[in-house]
Length: 138
Image 1: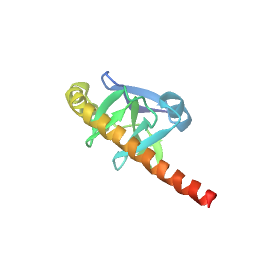
Image 2 (image 1 turned 30 degrees about the vertical axis):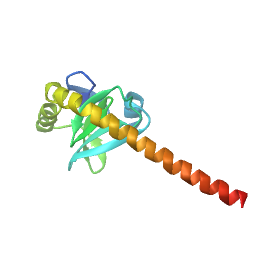
Image 3 (image 1 turned 90 degrees about the vertical axis):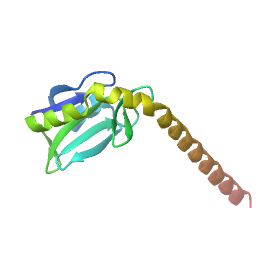
């Protein structure tokens, strides 16, 4: 069964697509490591967690979404075809011209926060490793 959904690619306008209603297909199309963001009660955004940092795409709720993503409708936790009204709503919400300036403006802030978080994680790991080494040595 094929469903209607929206495809949003970095630097390109939103497109309506028909794709198989299979998570296996979505993983092969977007990437293996998916994350989902609920946009409303029966619509979700599906993106790749491991998208490249160079693929700044759109902004949603003060967060930059990286890489290509899909917007699909859901019903009882199943992926279904989007209705015309939902397609129009999210098509307008993710229009390229609405997001270009915002993404460029927030890109530096995003990178700074991203690298700051990585440094914190590395520091925590180093401290944990020291404790483990001291326990083993003692």
